[in-house]
Amino acid sequence: MRTCHLLLYFFVIFVIRVKSDPDPLQDYCIADTQSSQSFFVNGAPCINPANAIASHFTTSALSKPGNTTTNPLGFNVTLTNIRNLPGMNTLGLTMARVDIAGNGLVPPHTHPRASEVTILIKGSLLVGFVDTSNRLFTQQLREGDSFVFPKGLIHFLYNLDSKASATAISGLTSQNPGAQLASAATFTTKPNIPDEVLKKAFQINGQDVSRIRKNLGG
Ligand SMILES: *[C@@H]1O[C@H](CO)[C@@H](O)[C@H](O)[C@H]1NC(C)=O
Ligand SMILES: *[C@@H]1O[C@H](CO)[C@@H](O)[C@H](O)[C@H]1NC(C)=O
Image (cartoon, rainbow, N blue to C red):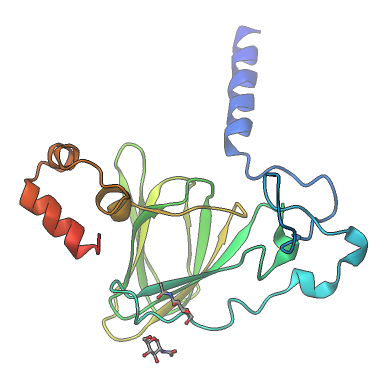
Protein backbone atom coordinates (compact mmCIF):
# COMPACT_ATOMS: atom_id res chain seq x y z
CA MET A 1 0.00 0.00 0.00
CA ARG A 2 2.79 2.36 0.95
CA THR A 3 4.63 1.82 -2.37
CA CYS A 4 1.37 2.29 -4.20
CA HIS A 5 0.82 5.71 -2.59
CA LEU A 6 4.40 6.67 -3.26
CA LEU A 7 4.06 5.71 -6.93
CA LEU A 8 0.83 7.67 -7.20
CA TYR A 9 2.53 10.65 -5.59
CA PHE A 10 5.40 10.55 -8.10
CA PHE A 11 2.97 10.06 -10.97
CA VAL A 12 0.99 13.16 -9.92
CA ILE A 13 4.19 15.18 -9.52
CA PHE A 14 5.32 13.98 -12.97
CA VAL A 15 2.03 14.91 -14.62
CA ILE A 16 2.10 18.37 -13.01
CA ARG A 17 5.69 18.89 -14.13
CA VAL A 18 5.21 18.00 -17.84
CA LYS A 19 2.04 20.07 -18.26
CA SER A 20 2.29 22.48 -21.19
CA ASP A 21 0.20 25.66 -21.44
CA PRO A 22 -3.21 25.47 -19.69
CA ASP A 23 -5.92 23.70 -21.71
CA PRO A 24 -8.45 25.98 -23.43
CA LEU A 25 -11.97 25.88 -21.98
CA GLN A 26 -13.56 26.40 -25.40
CA ASP A 27 -12.92 25.14 -28.98
CA TYR A 28 -10.68 28.12 -29.72
CA CYS A 29 -9.87 31.63 -28.57
CA ILE A 30 -8.96 33.81 -31.59
CA ALA A 31 -6.52 36.36 -30.22
CA ASP A 32 -8.02 39.85 -30.08
CA THR A 33 -4.89 41.72 -31.13
CA GLN A 34 -6.81 45.02 -31.50
CA SER A 35 -7.95 45.28 -27.90
CA SER A 36 -6.11 47.88 -25.85
CA GLN A 37 -5.56 45.59 -22.94
CA SER A 38 -6.00 47.28 -19.59
CA PHE A 39 -5.90 43.98 -17.69
CA PHE A 40 -3.57 41.01 -17.88
CA VAL A 41 -4.52 37.49 -18.88
CA ASN A 42 -2.39 34.38 -19.44
CA GLY A 43 -2.32 34.75 -23.24
CA ALA A 44 -4.44 37.24 -25.21
CA PRO A 45 -8.19 37.89 -24.84
CA CYS A 46 -10.41 36.24 -27.50
CA ILE A 47 -12.67 37.81 -30.09
CA ASN A 48 -16.34 36.80 -30.16
CA PRO A 49 -16.29 33.15 -31.39
CA ALA A 50 -19.14 34.01 -33.81
CA ASN A 51 -16.67 36.24 -35.69
CA ALA A 52 -14.11 33.45 -36.23
CA ILE A 53 -13.16 32.80 -39.86
CA ALA A 54 -10.85 30.28 -41.56
CA SER A 55 -8.08 32.83 -42.11
CA HIS A 56 -7.63 33.13 -38.33
CA PHE A 57 -6.28 29.58 -38.44
CA THR A 58 -3.78 29.94 -41.30
CA THR A 59 -0.56 31.81 -41.96
CA SER A 60 2.13 32.10 -44.64
CA ALA A 61 4.60 33.42 -42.06
CA LEU A 62 6.88 30.39 -42.45
CA SER A 63 6.76 30.23 -46.27
CA LYS A 64 9.72 32.54 -46.88
CA PRO A 65 13.30 32.11 -45.60
CA GLY A 66 14.47 34.60 -42.96
CA ASN A 67 17.41 36.79 -43.99
CA THR A 68 20.54 35.31 -42.37
CA THR A 69 23.04 37.92 -43.61
CA THR A 70 22.17 40.53 -40.96
CA ASN A 71 23.01 38.17 -38.08
CA PRO A 72 26.75 37.70 -37.33
CA LEU A 73 26.09 34.05 -36.41
CA GLY A 74 24.21 33.46 -39.67
CA PHE A 75 20.78 32.35 -38.50
CA ASN A 76 17.23 33.70 -38.58
CA VAL A 77 14.23 32.26 -36.71
CA THR A 78 10.71 33.02 -37.96
CA LEU A 79 7.90 32.24 -35.51
CA THR A 80 4.16 31.87 -35.62
CA ASN A 81 2.51 34.06 -32.99
CA ILE A 82 -0.89 35.50 -32.06
CA ARG A 83 -0.46 38.32 -34.60
CA ASN A 84 0.31 36.23 -37.72
CA LEU A 85 -1.79 33.24 -36.53
CA PRO A 86 -4.41 34.53 -34.03
CA GLY A 87 -6.20 31.14 -33.96
CA MET A 88 -3.24 29.56 -32.08
CA ASN A 89 -4.01 31.63 -28.96
CA THR A 90 -4.35 29.34 -25.86
CA LEU A 91 -3.59 26.16 -27.87
CA GLY A 92 -0.18 25.67 -26.27
CA LEU A 93 1.96 25.49 -29.39
CA THR A 94 4.23 27.48 -31.70
CA MET A 95 5.87 26.68 -35.04
CA ALA A 96 9.27 28.00 -36.02
CA ARG A 97 11.21 28.16 -39.26
CA VAL A 98 14.96 28.18 -38.68
CA ASP A 99 17.19 29.27 -41.56
CA ILE A 100 20.93 28.83 -41.06
CA ALA A 101 23.61 30.05 -43.51
CA GLY A 102 26.70 27.97 -44.36
CA ASN A 103 28.56 27.29 -41.08
CA GLY A 104 25.91 29.37 -39.30
CA LEU A 105 25.08 28.67 -35.67
CA VAL A 106 21.99 28.98 -33.49
CA PRO A 107 24.07 29.38 -30.30
CA PRO A 108 23.39 27.54 -27.02
CA HIS A 109 20.00 28.68 -25.70
CA THR A 110 16.97 27.44 -23.77
CA HIS A 111 13.20 27.76 -24.06
CA PRO A 112 12.05 28.05 -20.44
CA ARG A 113 8.42 27.17 -21.26
CA ALA A 114 8.64 24.62 -24.09
CA SER A 115 10.02 21.35 -25.37
CA GLU A 116 10.93 21.49 -29.05
CA VAL A 117 10.89 18.95 -31.85
CA THR A 118 12.72 19.94 -35.01
CA ILE A 119 12.75 18.39 -38.47
CA LEU A 120 15.52 19.15 -40.93
CA ILE A 121 13.96 20.07 -44.28
CA LYS A 122 17.12 21.03 -46.15
CA GLY A 123 20.89 20.74 -45.62
CA SER A 124 22.81 19.08 -42.78
CA LEU A 125 22.91 20.11 -39.14
CA LEU A 126 24.76 19.15 -36.00
CA VAL A 127 22.28 19.52 -33.14
CA GLY A 128 22.64 18.84 -29.45
CA PHE A 129 21.45 19.54 -25.93
CA VAL A 130 22.98 19.35 -22.46
CA ASP A 131 21.09 17.77 -19.55
CA THR A 132 21.20 18.94 -15.93
CA SER A 133 24.15 16.65 -15.18
CA ASN A 134 26.07 18.30 -18.07
CA ARG A 135 25.83 15.29 -20.36
CA LEU A 136 25.89 16.32 -24.00
CA PHE A 137 23.65 14.57 -26.52
CA THR A 138 24.45 15.38 -30.15
CA GLN A 139 23.31 14.09 -33.48
CA GLN A 140 24.17 14.86 -37.08
CA LEU A 141 20.89 15.32 -38.92
CA ARG A 142 20.28 14.60 -42.58
CA GLU A 143 17.28 15.84 -44.54
CA GLY A 144 14.08 14.41 -43.06
CA ASP A 145 15.61 13.59 -39.65
CA SER A 146 14.02 14.91 -36.45
CA PHE A 147 15.41 15.64 -32.99
CA VAL A 148 13.81 16.70 -29.70
CA PHE A 149 15.13 19.25 -27.24
CA PRO A 150 13.59 18.69 -23.79
CA LYS A 151 11.98 21.69 -22.09
CA GLY A 152 14.34 24.17 -20.50
CA LEU A 153 17.58 22.42 -21.51
CA ILE A 154 20.42 24.24 -23.30
CA HIS A 155 20.65 23.31 -26.98
CA PHE A 156 22.21 24.44 -30.27
CA LEU A 157 21.99 23.91 -34.04
CA TYR A 158 25.10 24.17 -36.22
CA ASN A 159 25.25 24.03 -40.03
CA LEU A 160 28.17 21.72 -40.84
CA ASP A 161 28.21 22.72 -44.51
CA SER A 162 30.32 25.81 -45.18
CA LYS A 163 28.41 26.77 -48.32
CA ALA A 164 24.86 25.39 -48.46
CA SER A 165 22.22 26.89 -46.17
CA ALA A 166 20.04 24.68 -43.95
CA THR A 167 16.35 24.93 -43.12
CA ALA A 168 14.58 23.30 -40.18
CA ILE A 169 11.00 23.50 -38.95
CA SER A 170 10.31 23.26 -35.23
CA GLY A 171 7.21 22.71 -33.15
CA LEU A 172 7.25 24.04 -29.58
CA THR A 173 4.90 23.13 -26.74
CA SER A 174 3.92 26.66 -25.70
CA GLN A 175 2.39 29.66 -27.43
CA ASN A 176 5.13 31.69 -25.75
CA PRO A 177 8.20 29.41 -25.48
CA GLY A 178 10.65 32.21 -24.60
CA ALA A 179 14.29 32.02 -25.68
CA GLN A 180 17.31 32.76 -23.55
CA LEU A 181 20.76 32.73 -25.17
CA ALA A 182 23.44 31.53 -22.75
CA SER A 183 26.00 34.05 -24.05
CA ALA A 184 23.64 37.06 -24.02
CA ALA A 185 22.12 36.14 -20.65
CA THR A 186 25.59 36.34 -19.10
CA PHE A 187 27.59 38.93 -21.06
CA THR A 188 25.15 41.40 -22.64
CA THR A 189 22.51 41.92 -19.96
CA LYS A 190 21.14 45.40 -19.14
CA PRO A 191 22.50 46.47 -16.78
CA ASN A 192 25.68 44.38 -16.86
CA ILE A 193 26.21 41.51 -14.46
CA PRO A 194 29.08 42.86 -12.28
CA ASP A 195 32.54 42.00 -13.71
CA GLU A 196 33.51 40.40 -10.39
CA VAL A 197 30.72 37.88 -10.80
CA LEU A 198 31.63 36.98 -14.39
CA LYS A 199 35.38 36.85 -13.60
CA LYS A 200 34.77 34.37 -10.83
CA ALA A 201 32.08 32.35 -12.62
CA PHE A 202 34.11 31.84 -15.79
CA GLN A 203 37.58 32.00 -14.16
CA ILE A 204 38.67 34.84 -16.46
CA ASN A 205 40.08 38.35 -15.96
CA GLY A 206 38.52 41.80 -16.47
CA GLN A 207 39.98 42.15 -19.99
CA ASP A 208 38.42 38.83 -20.97
CA VAL A 209 35.04 40.06 -19.70
CA SER A 210 35.33 43.32 -21.72
CA ARG A 211 36.48 41.48 -24.83
CA ILE A 212 33.64 38.94 -24.73
CA ARG A 213 31.08 41.73 -24.09
CA LYS A 214 32.40 43.72 -27.05
CA ASN A 215 32.50 40.65 -29.33
CA LEU A 216 28.87 39.91 -28.50
CA GLY A 217 27.84 43.48 -29.23
CA GLY A 218 27.18 44.35 -25.56
C1 LIG B 1 15.13 37.78 -40.28
O1 LIG B 1 14.58 37.79 -41.58
C2 LIG B 1 13.55 38.77 -41.75
C3 LIG B 1 12.94 38.56 -43.11
O2 LIG B 1 13.92 38.57 -44.14
C4 LIG B 1 14.16 40.16 -41.56
O3 LIG B 1 13.15 41.13 -41.70
C5 LIG B 1 14.77 40.23 -40.17
O4 LIG B 1 15.43 41.48 -40.01
C6 LIG B 1 15.77 39.12 -39.95
N1 LIG B 1 16.18 39.14 -38.56
C7 LIG B 1 17.46 39.19 -38.18
C8 LIG B 1 17.71 39.21 -36.71
O5 LIG B 1 18.38 39.20 -38.96
C1 LIG C 1 19.27 40.52 -46.57
O1 LIG C 1 19.65 41.69 -45.87
C2 LIG C 1 20.76 42.36 -46.45
C3 LIG C 1 21.17 43.47 -45.48
O2 LIG C 1 20.03 44.20 -45.04
C4 LIG C 1 20.36 42.85 -47.83
O3 LIG C 1 21.45 43.50 -48.42
C5 LIG C 1 19.94 41.65 -48.68
O4 LIG C 1 19.46 42.09 -49.94
C6 LIG C 1 18.85 40.84 -47.98
N1 LIG C 1 18.60 39.62 -48.73
C7 LIG C 1 17.37 39.24 -49.09
C8 LIG C 1 17.28 37.93 -49.83
O5 LIG C 1 16.37 39.89 -48.84
